[in-house]
Image (cartoon, rainbow, N blue to C red; front, side, top):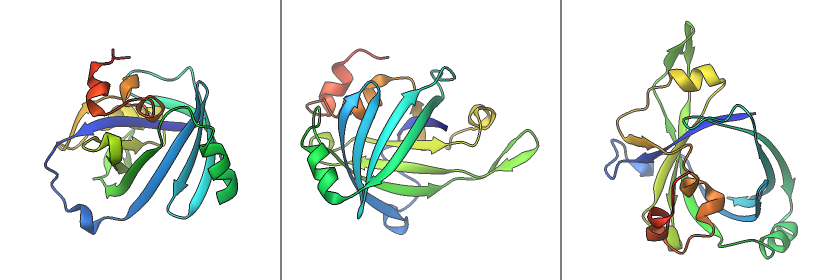
Length: 174
């Protein structure tokens, strides 16, 4: 099970992106309910199916996620059948300070997505947690702003059908 929270981020970051590990990602959505996605991450191709679970809340997302490696030809074939635009982004891996949960030290990192193309200017960070308790105990650093975990406008599947970032703000929340 995937347990995560998603945050919009500050325009000024307290670290240099050039010092972080990064991946170039291209992804397309075949379906948004259930979520069926194909992704190229550097030189890997992945088919993902996600199902929302009953544990999902507005502040923490809980999904059942199944991933399968595919070849480039299958990726290109499925990408051509997409519903919406192809999303292009750079994902940076940002180490975060450990925090306490139930007496244990929990170490997590943020995946900071910087979007390109028609979504240029959009940036958000996702943090995955080992448990719902850890997700609820997490206090985000100051550069992580609004928690948008429950706001469907910031789900990648919905971003794929936006025309640009101004279209996202004009849609109703949740």
